[in-house]
Length: 331
Image (cartoon, rainbow, N blue to C red; front, side, top):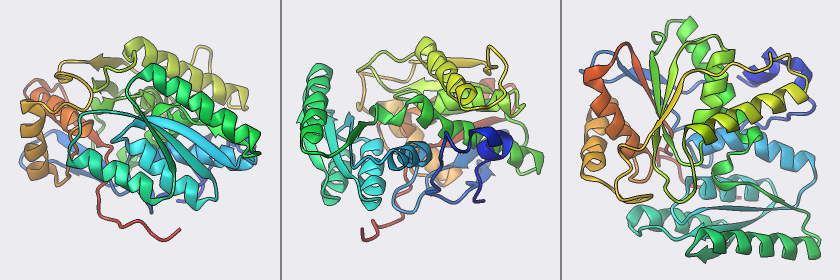
């Protein structure tokens, strides 16, 4: 589809909340082979230059940057950040200069591929060893771009601003349409990893607005910045306020679906694989045909695997990692 569900549902927001289509919707849903009641919605192939949940956020944030006439963008993430690769590829292709503040994380082949993908776009990369150093470095990059006439903008870690969260409000409406057509049963729960919180926040709001009763289970993978149920809930509420200010007729307070954020599968910390996540990655590949990475999706898979015995209805795992099946197209 070309026109987003959010614009169809709330036509008054079109001018204030621009949208730039970067992927083909809807993404597929399918049952996990041999595991009744478990389903996957696969966002891995969403996007022409890179896939996964960060692309859905960029459809709203990048459109806004271009509308405002920004010439450069500064953002941040881990050295293995999916958000960083997505911003570097899509923003560079749109003509913006990209600067990344990359916080060091445990180094492995996955991280090496991610940071190399950012460098390949020509983006500026500044690597730091602490969150505090990251804030300082981002400030310096913004100041330098301003002085040189770069008209910079700042995108937060993970793209998880209220505007970025619209990506998963939109995705929730997409899921509701798939439930309505019988592509899958109404899920009792949806399981997603929680790093910067934008995916879970957008779903908690979007599912409620779409009329689905599905609870959101967030699997915490981040111990670098505070991120739990209160932070995700506040982000969802801020997204509702953005919609309301932009002309959407939302009730006050806006409805949010049940939300939990669990740290049971975090392990030693951000970017550190666990025995459970490594085993769950192989399990999910066998039953769902999707391939995880160790930072986010493998830990969400570990949560899903443990939930199977206690499931009180269909459980949907929302796969948020790039599927790795597309080369970077020429800029």
